[in-house]
Amino acid sequence: MSVRPWHAVELGESQMGETRALFEQVFGHSMSEALWRWKYDGGRGCATGTRDEDGALLAHYGGTARTLVCEGQPLQAVQLGDVMVKVQARGILSRQGPFATATQAFLHDHIGSPGGFALGFGFPSARHTRLGEKLGLYTPLGEVLEVRWNTPSCPTPFWKRPWVCAPVDWSAAHTDARLDALWDALRQTAQGFVLPQRDARWWRHRFANHPDGPYRCWWVRGRFSRRILGAVVLRPGQGAAADWELLDWLGAVQDTPTLLAAARELAAHGGARALNSWLSQPLVRHLQALAPPPDGAQASEQPACPYCVTQRTAPAVPAALRNQPWWLTGGDTDFR
Image (spheres, rainbow, N blue to C red):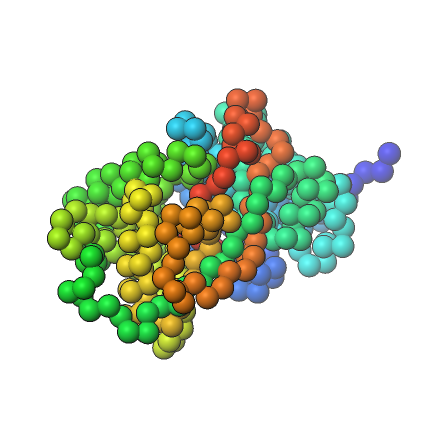
């Protein structure tokens, strides 16, 4: 029996420099120390690597803790990310290669084991999805679509809008309570979906504390009722007239058309000609059935990436997690 010239190792803060160097080689841009800490510090994340016989890091497989809500019950999951293989080792994509070695060790140690996560999920590239499926590691569940809405060429005068918007003040005492109430409204009205948790704590970490932003968050209120209908998160485009991106929103499902309309208007006031968003295909179809966009608003949709779950899970994971549609937005990734 041949001995593999590499082995799996756990990676942490002491190996941060190696992880960041591999990230830059693989993705072509740097990962700051602040971003590494945002992902992995404080027990939020864990990672496994593959080293060769000389100790060089060939592959990295990471994950961050994320709660999923399925049939009203929370499941402690891990969101997979920073899946990287050194350029020189990419030709070795066998069941015992560096990629498979890191992946299998991560899944074995962190998923379905005592004290581990119930399952893993993520947004791998189409290539990694095919490889993970071939190696018996992933089960693809569907596609994330990039949806592009044209913004209004003539923004609606404020006195004609049924809503008003105001920036979220992250220092205000009421902010977390408001966000938690909106998350509860979404959770109660989207019970047919698998929902990654997006409570105030998670929104604050994802959008207020992200070191690479910038994200802009707004409350959306009924103009006459003054009731808070929801909150939206947008990322401005780079340059004049560049597209903006809708990362996420919170609020009851029936208020979603108003929140999306407000997001398009906000992007238009920022000079954008279009608003883009990454959304799971079942969510796109649900929104279209809920309220078709105004004439000319939706210009296009195209595949962005698959979303998958790990084949290895804890025994208690319900079948509904694979069978029900997933509610996913670009804010659920760690790279938008």
